[in-house]
Image (cartoon, rainbow, N blue to C red; front, top):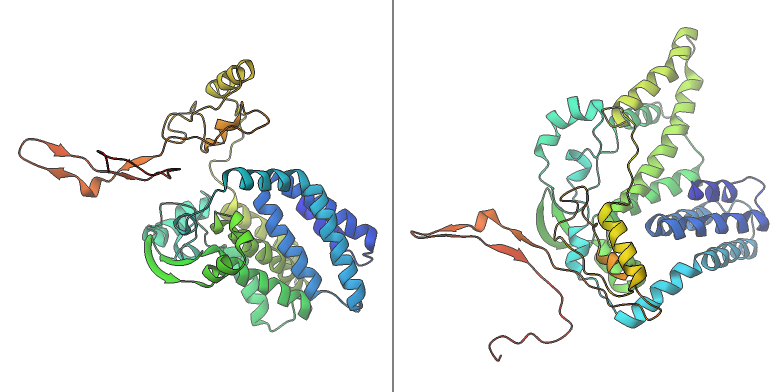
Length: 364
Protein backbone atom coordinates (compact mmCIF):
# COMPACT_ATOMS: atom_id res chain seq x y z
CA UNK A 1 0.00 0.00 0.00
CA UNK A 2 2.86 2.53 0.43
CA UNK A 3 3.60 2.09 -3.28
CA UNK A 4 -0.04 2.83 -4.15
CA UNK A 5 -0.03 5.98 -2.00
CA UNK A 6 3.23 7.05 -3.66
CA UNK A 7 1.64 6.57 -7.09
CA UNK A 8 -1.39 8.58 -6.01
CA UNK A 9 0.75 11.63 -5.20
CA UNK A 10 2.94 11.33 -8.30
CA UNK A 11 -0.01 10.96 -10.68
CA UNK A 12 -2.13 13.71 -9.09
CA UNK A 13 -3.26 16.26 -11.73
CA UNK A 14 -2.18 19.10 -9.43
CA UNK A 15 1.20 17.58 -8.63
CA UNK A 16 3.78 19.98 -7.20
CA UNK A 17 7.02 19.68 -5.23
CA UNK A 18 5.16 18.91 -1.99
CA UNK A 19 3.31 16.03 -3.65
CA UNK A 20 6.65 14.87 -5.08
CA UNK A 21 8.15 14.79 -1.56
CA UNK A 22 5.17 12.78 -0.30
CA UNK A 23 5.60 10.33 -3.18
CA UNK A 24 9.30 9.83 -2.42
CA UNK A 25 8.52 9.45 1.29
CA UNK A 26 5.95 6.68 0.81
CA UNK A 27 8.07 4.85 -1.73
CA UNK A 28 10.99 5.01 0.74
CA UNK A 29 8.77 3.30 3.33
CA UNK A 30 7.90 0.69 0.73
CA UNK A 31 11.62 0.07 0.14
CA UNK A 32 12.24 -0.35 3.89
CA UNK A 33 9.46 -2.92 4.17
CA UNK A 34 10.05 -4.73 0.86
CA UNK A 35 13.25 -4.03 -1.06
CA UNK A 36 12.21 -5.70 -4.31
CA UNK A 37 8.89 -3.88 -4.42
CA UNK A 38 10.63 -0.62 -3.55
CA UNK A 39 13.09 -1.03 -6.41
CA UNK A 40 10.37 -1.91 -8.90
CA UNK A 41 8.26 0.96 -7.60
CA UNK A 42 11.16 3.35 -8.20
CA UNK A 43 11.35 2.15 -11.81
CA UNK A 44 7.57 2.48 -12.22
CA UNK A 45 7.55 6.08 -11.02
CA UNK A 46 10.66 7.22 -12.89
CA UNK A 47 9.30 5.84 -16.17
CA UNK A 48 5.94 7.46 -15.37
CA UNK A 49 7.78 10.78 -15.03
CA UNK A 50 9.43 10.32 -18.41
CA UNK A 51 6.22 9.43 -20.28
CA UNK A 52 3.87 11.81 -18.49
CA UNK A 53 5.86 15.00 -18.32
CA UNK A 54 2.89 16.73 -19.91
CA UNK A 55 3.61 20.42 -20.61
CA UNK A 56 6.18 20.80 -17.87
CA UNK A 57 9.52 22.26 -18.87
CA UNK A 58 12.65 20.12 -18.80
CA UNK A 59 13.92 22.14 -15.82
CA UNK A 60 10.71 21.52 -13.85
CA UNK A 61 10.81 17.85 -14.78
CA UNK A 62 14.41 17.47 -13.60
CA UNK A 63 13.67 19.39 -10.40
CA UNK A 64 10.72 17.16 -9.50
CA UNK A 65 12.59 13.97 -10.40
CA UNK A 66 15.55 15.13 -8.29
CA UNK A 67 13.37 15.97 -5.26
CA UNK A 68 11.59 12.63 -5.55
CA UNK A 69 14.88 10.68 -5.80
CA UNK A 70 16.55 12.52 -2.90
CA UNK A 71 13.52 12.02 -0.65
CA UNK A 72 13.37 8.34 -1.56
CA UNK A 73 17.07 7.86 -0.79
CA UNK A 74 16.87 9.72 2.56
CA UNK A 75 13.96 7.59 3.77
CA UNK A 76 15.60 4.39 2.50
CA UNK A 77 18.98 5.32 3.98
CA UNK A 78 18.98 2.88 6.95
CA UNK A 79 18.54 -0.08 4.61
CA UNK A 80 20.97 1.30 2.02
CA UNK A 81 23.69 1.93 4.63
CA UNK A 82 23.23 -1.56 6.05
CA UNK A 83 23.52 -3.09 2.60
CA UNK A 84 26.66 -1.10 1.73
CA UNK A 85 28.22 -2.02 5.10
CA UNK A 86 27.54 -5.69 4.48
CA UNK A 87 29.04 -5.37 0.98
CA UNK A 88 32.17 -3.71 2.39
CA UNK A 89 32.74 -6.30 5.12
CA UNK A 90 31.85 -9.56 3.39
CA UNK A 91 32.02 -8.67 -0.32
CA UNK A 92 29.32 -11.20 -1.29
CA UNK A 93 28.92 -12.06 -4.97
CA UNK A 94 25.89 -13.64 -6.59
CA UNK A 95 26.88 -16.24 -9.16
CA UNK A 96 25.03 -15.99 -12.46
CA UNK A 97 23.57 -19.42 -11.77
CA UNK A 98 21.47 -17.93 -8.96
CA UNK A 99 19.84 -15.44 -11.31
CA UNK A 100 19.17 -18.30 -13.73
CA UNK A 101 17.67 -20.51 -11.01
CA UNK A 102 15.36 -17.78 -9.74
CA UNK A 103 14.34 -16.54 -13.19
CA UNK A 104 11.04 -17.14 -14.91
CA UNK A 105 10.88 -19.50 -17.87
CA UNK A 106 9.21 -18.32 -21.06
CA UNK A 107 6.81 -21.23 -20.71
CA UNK A 108 5.61 -19.88 -17.35
CA UNK A 109 3.51 -17.30 -19.16
CA UNK A 110 1.59 -20.11 -20.86
CA UNK A 111 1.68 -23.16 -18.61
CA UNK A 112 2.08 -21.84 -15.03
CA UNK A 113 -0.86 -20.84 -12.81
CA UNK A 114 0.41 -19.43 -9.56
CA UNK A 115 -2.67 -19.65 -7.35
CA UNK A 116 -5.11 -22.40 -6.52
CA UNK A 117 -8.27 -20.63 -7.66
CA UNK A 118 -11.40 -22.44 -8.76
CA UNK A 119 -10.88 -21.77 -12.49
CA UNK A 120 -7.15 -22.57 -12.33
CA UNK A 121 -7.65 -25.83 -10.46
CA UNK A 122 -10.66 -27.06 -12.43
CA UNK A 123 -10.12 -25.68 -15.92
CA UNK A 124 -6.76 -24.15 -16.84
CA UNK A 125 -4.36 -26.35 -14.88
CA UNK A 126 -5.93 -29.67 -16.03
CA UNK A 127 -5.92 -28.50 -19.68
CA UNK A 128 -2.68 -26.52 -19.99
CA UNK A 129 -0.89 -26.70 -16.63
CA UNK A 130 -0.12 -30.40 -17.06
CA UNK A 131 2.59 -29.39 -19.52
CA UNK A 132 4.44 -27.25 -16.98
CA UNK A 133 7.81 -28.78 -16.00
CA UNK A 134 9.27 -25.74 -14.24
CA UNK A 135 9.32 -26.88 -10.61
CA UNK A 136 12.57 -25.39 -9.26
CA UNK A 137 13.30 -21.79 -8.32
CA UNK A 138 10.61 -19.14 -8.81
CA UNK A 139 7.87 -18.85 -11.39
CA UNK A 140 6.03 -16.16 -13.27
CA UNK A 141 2.59 -17.14 -14.56
CA UNK A 142 -0.33 -16.71 -16.89
CA UNK A 143 -1.74 -13.21 -16.34
CA UNK A 144 -5.35 -14.32 -16.33
CA UNK A 145 -8.07 -15.26 -18.76
CA UNK A 146 -10.63 -12.67 -17.61
CA UNK A 147 -8.32 -9.61 -17.86
CA UNK A 148 -7.04 -10.64 -21.29
CA UNK A 149 -10.59 -11.17 -22.63
CA UNK A 150 -11.77 -7.75 -21.42
CA UNK A 151 -8.67 -5.89 -22.66
CA UNK A 152 -8.68 -7.82 -25.94
CA UNK A 153 -12.36 -7.10 -26.56
CA UNK A 154 -11.87 -3.38 -26.01
CA UNK A 155 -8.85 -3.33 -28.32
CA UNK A 156 -10.81 -5.18 -31.01
CA UNK A 157 -13.38 -2.40 -30.89
CA UNK A 158 -10.50 -0.12 -31.90
CA UNK A 159 -11.33 2.25 -29.10
CA UNK A 160 -8.68 4.37 -27.41
CA UNK A 161 -8.33 2.93 -23.91
CA UNK A 162 -5.93 5.48 -22.58
CA UNK A 163 -3.96 8.46 -23.82
CA UNK A 164 -0.78 7.80 -25.81
CA UNK A 165 1.92 8.56 -23.17
CA UNK A 166 0.24 6.48 -20.47
CA UNK A 167 -0.36 3.62 -22.90
CA UNK A 168 3.30 3.69 -23.95
CA UNK A 169 4.31 3.73 -20.27
CA UNK A 170 2.21 0.65 -19.49
CA UNK A 171 3.47 -1.29 -22.50
CA UNK A 172 7.04 -0.39 -21.53
CA UNK A 173 6.43 -1.80 -18.04
CA UNK A 174 5.10 -5.02 -19.58
CA UNK A 175 8.17 -5.33 -21.84
CA UNK A 176 10.61 -4.59 -19.00
CA UNK A 177 8.81 -6.99 -16.67
CA UNK A 178 8.87 -9.77 -19.25
CA UNK A 179 12.51 -9.29 -20.34
CA UNK A 180 13.90 -8.84 -16.82
CA UNK A 181 11.89 -11.73 -15.34
CA UNK A 182 13.55 -14.17 -17.76
CA UNK A 183 16.97 -13.45 -16.27
CA UNK A 184 20.37 -13.56 -18.00
CA UNK A 185 19.98 -16.94 -19.73
CA UNK A 186 17.12 -18.59 -21.58
CA UNK A 187 15.05 -21.28 -19.87
CA UNK A 188 12.11 -23.17 -21.30
CA UNK A 189 9.79 -25.40 -19.32
CA UNK A 190 12.35 -26.59 -16.78
CA UNK A 191 15.27 -26.82 -19.22
CA UNK A 192 18.31 -24.54 -19.24
CA UNK A 193 18.97 -23.42 -22.83
CA UNK A 194 22.15 -21.37 -22.20
CA UNK A 195 21.36 -18.63 -24.75
CA UNK A 196 22.15 -15.15 -23.32
CA UNK A 197 19.18 -12.83 -22.95
CA UNK A 198 19.04 -8.99 -22.74
CA UNK A 199 19.15 -9.06 -18.93
CA UNK A 200 22.66 -10.53 -19.19
CA UNK A 201 23.83 -7.20 -20.64
CA UNK A 202 21.89 -5.28 -17.99
CA UNK A 203 23.70 -7.19 -15.24
CA UNK A 204 27.03 -6.64 -16.94
CA UNK A 205 26.75 -2.89 -17.41
CA UNK A 206 24.46 -1.99 -14.47
CA UNK A 207 25.79 -4.27 -11.69
CA UNK A 208 23.82 -2.48 -8.98
CA UNK A 209 20.62 -4.00 -10.35
CA UNK A 210 22.03 -7.39 -9.35
CA UNK A 211 20.82 -6.80 -5.79
CA UNK A 212 17.52 -8.29 -6.96
CA UNK A 213 18.37 -11.96 -7.20
CA UNK A 214 14.89 -13.46 -7.66
CA UNK A 215 14.35 -11.83 -11.06
CA UNK A 216 11.13 -13.78 -11.71
CA UNK A 217 9.49 -11.24 -9.41
CA UNK A 218 9.74 -8.62 -12.15
CA UNK A 219 6.52 -10.37 -13.16
CA UNK A 220 4.92 -7.83 -10.80
CA UNK A 221 5.46 -5.10 -13.42
CA UNK A 222 3.39 -7.08 -15.91
CA UNK A 223 0.57 -7.66 -13.43
CA UNK A 224 0.66 -3.99 -12.42
CA UNK A 225 0.37 -2.77 -16.02
CA UNK A 226 -2.30 -5.35 -16.95
CA UNK A 227 -4.36 -4.29 -13.91
CA UNK A 228 -4.36 -0.64 -15.01
CA UNK A 229 -5.23 -1.59 -18.59
CA UNK A 230 -8.07 -3.73 -17.24
CA UNK A 231 -9.52 -0.79 -15.29
CA UNK A 232 -9.51 1.46 -18.36
CA UNK A 233 -10.96 -1.33 -20.50
CA UNK A 234 -13.75 -1.99 -18.02
CA UNK A 235 -14.65 1.67 -18.00
CA UNK A 236 -14.65 1.68 -21.81
CA UNK A 237 -16.76 -1.47 -22.18
CA UNK A 238 -19.25 -0.27 -19.56
CA UNK A 239 -19.64 3.06 -21.38
CA UNK A 240 -20.87 1.40 -24.59
CA UNK A 241 -23.39 -0.96 -22.97
CA UNK A 242 -26.89 0.27 -23.75
CA UNK A 243 -29.13 -2.47 -22.34
CA UNK A 244 -30.09 -1.50 -18.72
CA UNK A 245 -30.24 -5.10 -17.44
CA UNK A 246 -26.90 -6.01 -19.01
CA UNK A 247 -25.37 -2.83 -17.61
CA UNK A 248 -26.53 -3.72 -14.08
CA UNK A 249 -25.23 -7.29 -14.39
CA UNK A 250 -21.90 -6.47 -16.05
CA UNK A 251 -19.82 -5.63 -12.98
CA UNK A 252 -21.33 -8.24 -10.60
CA UNK A 253 -20.71 -11.02 -13.16
CA UNK A 254 -17.21 -9.75 -13.87
CA UNK A 255 -16.45 -9.56 -10.14
CA UNK A 256 -17.59 -13.17 -9.75
CA UNK A 257 -15.33 -14.27 -12.63
CA UNK A 258 -12.34 -12.48 -11.07
CA UNK A 259 -13.04 -14.16 -7.71
CA UNK A 260 -13.27 -17.59 -9.37
CA UNK A 261 -10.03 -17.02 -11.29
CA UNK A 262 -7.84 -15.27 -8.72
CA UNK A 263 -9.08 -16.05 -5.21
CA UNK A 264 -7.28 -19.14 -3.83
CA UNK A 265 -9.44 -22.04 -2.72
CA UNK A 266 -10.57 -23.32 -0.35
CA UNK A 267 -11.92 -20.00 0.93
CA UNK A 268 -10.84 -19.84 4.55
CA UNK A 269 -9.18 -17.52 6.99
CA UNK A 270 -6.86 -18.52 9.82
CA UNK A 271 -4.29 -17.02 12.14
CA UNK A 272 -0.88 -18.56 12.72
CA UNK A 273 1.97 -17.37 14.89
CA UNK A 274 5.10 -17.12 12.73
CA UNK A 275 7.28 -17.11 15.84
CA UNK A 276 7.78 -20.85 16.03
CA UNK A 277 9.09 -22.57 19.19
CA UNK A 278 12.54 -22.96 17.61
CA UNK A 279 12.70 -19.27 16.71
CA UNK A 280 11.67 -18.19 20.21
CA UNK A 281 14.26 -20.50 21.76
CA UNK A 282 17.03 -19.10 19.53
CA UNK A 283 15.97 -15.54 20.24
CA UNK A 284 16.13 -16.15 23.99
CA UNK A 285 19.48 -17.94 23.75
CA UNK A 286 21.02 -15.19 21.61
CA UNK A 287 19.92 -12.42 23.93
CA UNK A 288 21.55 -14.14 26.90
CA UNK A 289 24.72 -15.04 24.97
CA UNK A 290 25.25 -13.09 21.73
CA UNK A 291 26.99 -14.97 18.94
CA UNK A 292 26.54 -16.45 15.49
CA UNK A 293 23.82 -19.07 15.14
CA UNK A 294 24.09 -21.93 12.65
CA UNK A 295 20.99 -22.70 10.63
CA UNK A 296 19.66 -26.24 11.11
CA UNK A 297 18.00 -28.47 9.84
CA UNK A 298 19.05 -28.50 6.20
CA UNK A 299 15.66 -28.22 4.55
CA UNK A 300 13.39 -25.20 4.59
CA UNK A 301 10.05 -25.69 6.34
CA UNK A 302 10.37 -29.47 6.31
CA UNK A 303 8.19 -29.28 9.41
CA UNK A 304 6.12 -26.40 10.74
CA UNK A 305 8.63 -25.66 13.51
CA UNK A 306 11.76 -25.46 11.33
CA UNK A 307 13.87 -22.34 11.64
CA UNK A 308 13.35 -20.75 8.27
CA UNK A 309 14.64 -20.36 4.77
CA UNK A 310 17.63 -18.06 4.86
CA UNK A 311 20.75 -18.15 7.05
CA UNK A 312 19.84 -14.62 8.11
CA UNK A 313 19.12 -16.16 11.48
CA UNK A 314 22.87 -16.44 11.89
CA UNK A 315 22.75 -12.72 12.61
CA UNK A 316 20.06 -12.83 15.32
CA UNK A 317 22.61 -12.48 18.09
CA UNK A 318 25.18 -10.44 16.20
CA UNK A 319 27.08 -7.62 17.85
CA UNK A 320 28.07 -4.23 16.43
CA UNK A 321 30.77 -5.92 14.29
CA UNK A 322 28.21 -8.19 12.53
CA UNK A 323 28.87 -11.89 13.12
CA UNK A 324 29.93 -13.89 10.11
CA UNK A 325 27.24 -15.27 7.84
CA UNK A 326 26.87 -19.01 8.40
CA UNK A 327 24.79 -21.85 7.04
CA UNK A 328 24.93 -25.54 6.20
CA UNK A 329 24.83 -26.13 2.42
CA UNK A 330 22.01 -28.20 1.00
CA UNK A 331 22.84 -31.39 -0.89
CA UNK A 332 19.78 -32.96 -2.52
CA UNK A 333 19.30 -36.57 -3.57
CA UNK A 334 19.46 -36.99 -7.34
CA UNK A 335 17.28 -40.06 -7.83
CA UNK A 336 18.05 -40.21 -11.54
CA UNK A 337 21.73 -40.83 -10.70
CA UNK A 338 21.09 -43.74 -8.29
CA UNK A 339 23.33 -46.74 -9.05
CA UNK A 340 22.49 -50.29 -8.03
CA UNK A 341 25.27 -52.89 -7.84
CA UNK A 342 25.26 -56.51 -6.78
CA UNK A 343 26.01 -55.67 -3.15
CA UNK A 344 24.73 -52.13 -2.62
CA UNK A 345 22.78 -49.13 -3.81
CA UNK A 346 24.80 -45.96 -4.39
CA UNK A 347 22.92 -42.74 -3.77
CA UNK A 348 24.21 -39.52 -5.34
CA UNK A 349 23.66 -36.21 -3.56
CA UNK A 350 24.34 -33.04 -5.53
CA UNK A 351 25.05 -29.59 -4.14
CA UNK A 352 27.72 -27.00 -3.61
CA UNK A 353 29.18 -24.58 -1.12
CA UNK A 354 31.18 -21.37 -1.39
CA UNK A 355 34.63 -21.44 0.26
CA UNK A 356 36.55 -18.54 1.78
CA UNK A 357 39.93 -20.27 1.30
CA UNK A 358 41.62 -23.06 -0.67
CA UNK A 359 40.33 -26.61 -0.10
CA UNK A 360 43.03 -29.05 1.02
CA UNK A 361 42.30 -32.73 0.40
CA UNK A 362 44.89 -35.39 1.26
CA UNK A 363 47.66 -32.83 1.20
CA UNK A 364 46.65 -31.31 -2.13
